[in-house]
Length: 329
Picture 1 (cartoon, rainbow, N blue to C red):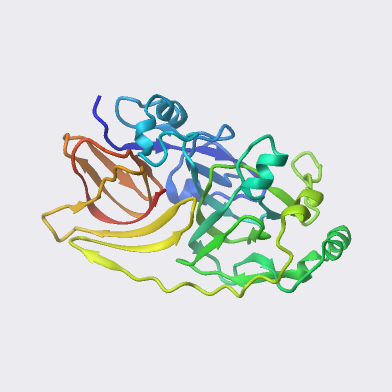
Picture 2: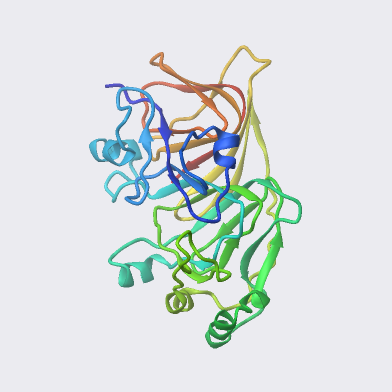
């Protein structure tokens, strides 16, 4: 069996704050209302993705990587599965104010699970859209606990206006929340540990308030004032038919933006295949075709996600006009 890229199909999540844009804009065809998140590339037990092309179509990505750990690359094939999770998120309403633990805390208190560091790439944002990024001032655990109890915790939070193409890095321990009207891609550690600090006293469809995790949130939260968030300088690097820029690099993942435009070229753009790591390609705008030297091809459209194994058989190239996020480790 040839080692070639393959298309993925996501698992959907119907959290109460979600909207309908993932179905409307990206044609996900997932029968959920609301559709808050799609887990595009995931081996997490709470929402695996599935292979949607080729000989392994219908298998979970989890089972594929268990059978072929070499797809992860030399750096990761001896470790415990895929280390990242890639999502699309549609926040019709505000997400809860929350925080994620470090690996060290999670291993100790959450039965050996991983912590969660993440990044956001904003795909669209309505006028006046905001997000929460840390505290606006130094606070104490007691101050936060009291303000959560009386519903005034927002006075301590740093709120930042957001617009299309913004990038935010959210290390574990950072109190944060996506605001209403924001559509984004999230790249994170493969973890579903979230400690909810405040949820605007909302109730679910059964009339119950959602659980808060105040004690755990305060145990892991960074109580210092967060640095004012400025967009980092980004440098485009050009080659024939393609431009790339680094959005984020941390010890857990690396994310680049790819601008593909070969419409006026007869040649195709190269996708360098690496021996050390896999690549996840998430198309966030436009469309194109991914070609393999074996003769296989994948037509992709906005919202599609592809997995490129380490050490593919032969060259991989792309043709089309599209914007993609490339995730690797």
